[in-house]
Image (cartoon, rainbow, N blue to C red; front, top):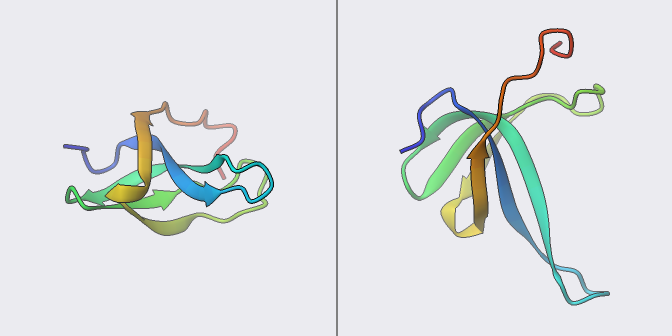
Length: 79
């Protein structure tokens, strides 16, 4: 069970790098909206440097490699 509102980092499979033949990964940091065991719905945090806005993402359980809780950003970084 992942509680709604928890801030987590989720590592997902992003596919095989054609040059190296190795698996590549993508990380998402944000707050859980819903988890039903099959799909994780979360609000991805905006980039700290302002290059990417906050966004809603859906991640299938089959793509998740690892997830863990992370602390909130300090107030001076939040926008």
